[in-house]
Length: 76
Image 1 (cartoon, rainbow, N blue to C red):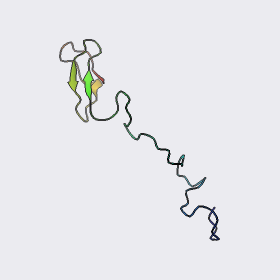
Image 2: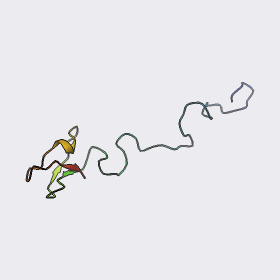
Image 3: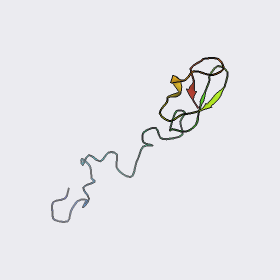
Image 4: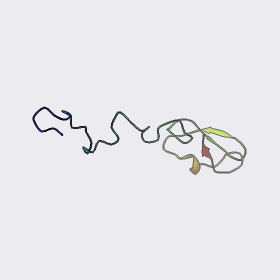
């Protein structure tokens, strides 16, 4: 703990300062990573017939119906 006597962290990033896990550990962030459904790019795929359509930003794939068979789409 900084006490003004030169001891402790000068940046206040020690234990109990509310800075998360520390040590540079960071999550992938909102919608980050390489999991299915992550990020704005990719395609929407029909789980029934395999038809692919480009994913539109701001429109979840599960809100789209397949143009071939009408089944709800899923994110690639």
